[in-house]
Image (cartoon, rainbow, N blue to C red):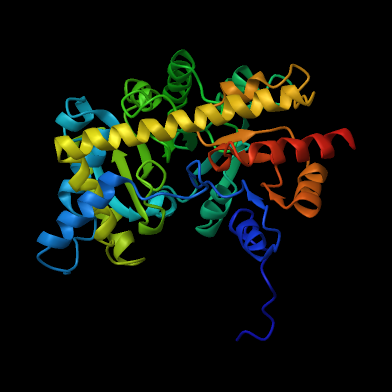
Length: 402
């Protein structure tokens, strides 16, 4: 069976981390994978998570299976975090949630659902987008198209070109949008632009699919779903793929969720039944520990407030690294765009689309042991005050030689 199997190419992001691990340079820097690091270069376990785990260890009654779509309390917590407890999609019971293994698992279940209900659907992806998006939809045999998103000249949203492209979307096509902290560009629409996007998708009869992996890392937990809520005012149906890897630091626990908003409660329940059928044939039912942590924290006023505080510290540290990165490049006379480096501080979330080309990225890796994605995407959350001088010196070296 496997006689003619050839080696698959390494993953664009995890393959980079593997190369980083093999690098013997003690001063190596990994800015590839989207993992938050503190000032000491560690990926911490949040204090609120530790406290929740202690409670679970003391009170957990069983290790029995969860329902196929996960614990109901987790679904309630996810929906209230995205929409708010008093939002009409919640009060009208038009939203249903399934607990999936990570945001990637949620995207895959969403892809399976699309293939099942609309096998001829086109999935529209931003150009650029997260490298794993095309692989997920290709794996289930969905057709993909792209719409412009990033303007390299202004290092900003190519909004008018984006709108013109979305005007060509067919009815019932799915348009994947990043809920906040766009990966890889760090550029998000304004609330006015979200409203216009929603108007166009409503006019075309398209269905938004929100990849919402970074809630709380742009402006705040309550502020970051503003685009999703603007879409809910304009379209009757949408899907949201959530992740708690970044904002809870639960990377290894694989805690995600697919939330589907339908036009009616009856339709939402029908969709839920199909999601459960697809999950049963895939991984049967989700793991319990990570979702129990999230549910415990969000269900306790003290732990929830503590989580918001710890998340704020992460958000502010990332923003500080953006500002420091831009200023250190300025000090060295390095301009990553024709208009300077201010765009780095304007971007949001963990990533910066730096403008470094593939040759410069390769030189950073080969000559300086600095690892970033080939597109030039930098994980700002992996920068520290201690590694910043070496990073900026290396960028100065590879850009001056280009």
